[in-house]
Length: 572
Image (cartoon, rainbow, N blue to C red; front, side, top):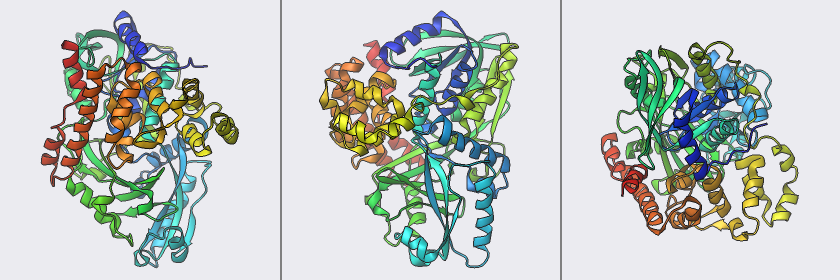
């Protein structure tokens, strides 16, 4: 059984010291879902593992996706059966064995526009989709008349469809899922350090033997020794390959995907929607008390850490979704906006919608493995392939991957607790929906949160400015989930930054005051964290008023980076 994982400031200090005190089998660069998955894969094979992440866990692409575990209907249409079959198998594993507390079924309505040929065409595709991944716990697709479809989605214009099909996929909070993968890796012995940036790779001749790592919080540096370094940095893949002094075996191109978040009452529907566009597809995804609408798919060659959504991106989404809505969405309806970068394998001439979503693994030189491409759903397969490739530098005797049989933290005991919802709610004086909310974010680790609130009943009160969350969830993020900054708390440990009309500004001060004693913040640090977060929100709002990417990028970068400011504090 894994050791319970509490990633707090004491853990981080110990983890940082251990980076320089031992030689690891595997050093993983990148704390997104692929890096976290690789750490879990390696640790459960019995290897010693360190993972370093320059910002926060899931701070890049892995917190800014469409939040789906899906096969991908458009990949099926492109006849990419291998990718779809692999992804559907992973979806089922997550739903039933590995993360049933985090990954949930979600339905989508596919409106039909053409009377004769389209229904049999889509039916054939969805029949394949239902069956090609093997046994599935999800219902099979259903045929709907126009009347039945409009009963299910009254928000649609009657003329926008001639009929419809309903099919099922799965969704997750991507940032929470990635964090749970990382914590599970730590529970199996991996050493994890966020705010730790690789500044150079260490070499012995042409062999990579480790890395120099900079602590962004304290300005310290350490040399980390490892038998193999695994580059899981997504859109930063080429930067690490260049750092190694080689050209690499493949290159990664960034594609920007923008999503908008609107309140649930703005679209009257019992189900999600999938709409065809001229380039790809558009999703309208149920998200608790909101809808997520996305995504765009455009080249991005500007700042990788803070991709900016422009007015053109937002207008594109509104125009496409309003084409089928009886009551159109307006910019005033939008509560949240987020932009992420897909790491696509480049080398083709087509637009980014056509670039490969399959992944590639390469060993460009001894001691270095790079992995890139792929999609969120197949992270576990990607991670296993990366560690398989690392065998060349680890010698014989490395076991096969076992993560197909390793539930994530919180999965064990989850179903039993679901059966006790009413009793748990009564015991803790909370509504049933609150306990359900906690179970679907933490699974059986919910008991750790409730223990924090023993003797501190105020922690079970709603958070000012974001009442869907309890105060204890923010404390737990600081004491167990490795949060170091206010931005970590409001953007990834919770999703307050995209779920509240003010994007978390009202909650910022109360959250900072709440976690200050746990994170060792004084009054000046609290003020600095709140100011930095408020400036970030303002910069994002300004960037979303700019028409083109260049101006939007400039506006977004006007806000100070709290992790860069950390170094300034450390030097004072």
